[in-house]
Length: 246
Image 1: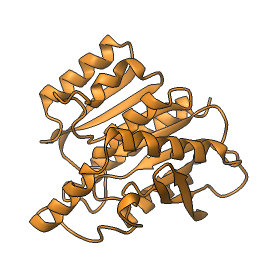
Image 2: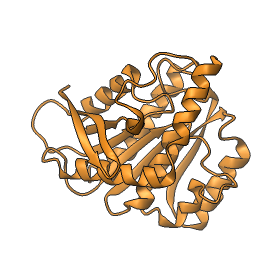
Image 3: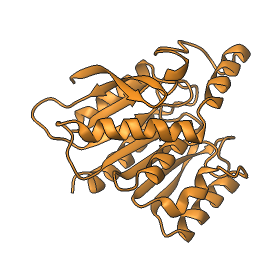
């Protein structure tokens, strides 16, 4: 699949990113892929390439660009305390305000590309990317018409800025694939999220991936589960197929 390294200007600086496109003539539907807390790396580049092979233009942004260009974290394990502290420190830099700034640049870039089909784009996020996907749709409901979250964390909390409180701003269709062994999104939080979405009249699906842990969809994650990962591809393609290919 053709891939381009691009720089995107935001209000806070220059975001480095990669753009993956299908072979042949477009235009094709556009999708933003948001990595997990580990940031962009070969595993996510492979996922973006796979999605592009299905007929989508995929933007893979480096979410930690304010701290330096990718790769920023390199190889590491969350079992290592120093690596874990570094990841959490980076996560703390991604405030809701900064995420909205980044979403504006990402949506603007993707919707302006001539190879991207008009009529709305999608976003898929993993781990912390699930919350980013929700915020992106809430901030740009006219442009972002489909959002998917896989093993998304902290989607419904007591924080006054919790993503679930944005439910009344969500206008498209969403899909949530939850791990049933996820300390970052336990059963009570899933129920809280679903209640908020139902109350707001949001079109969504929320499914539990039984026997799966946090990170089941991402190759290289300690919790990676091939069967669950393939299910995640099936549900994601179904969502984008019915919302972006109309």
